[in-house]
Image (cartoon, rainbow, N blue to C red; front, top):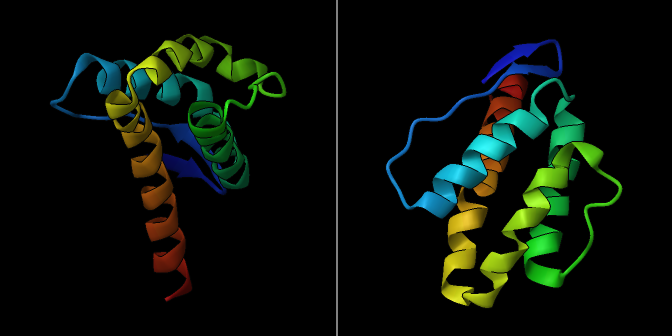
Length: 102
């Protein structure tokens, strides 16, 4: 993750995991790149809301491709695979903020 002020200018990942987690991570990096940190937090919440509560991503046109992952909800044990990259991003953002306030 690279920042310019509070804006994510680059976001990448290295992982070994299932195709769902890798595809989600790839789509996530593309949709979040260029956004401010607070916007990224909102996007994390929106994706989790779609996967866990059936909410729409309509308010986030940059996340449109991620709606394809709704099919994963048919397999509850795989939802965690789709959420893993988003949870990791949230943890990274929280860690970054904590390091700045220390």
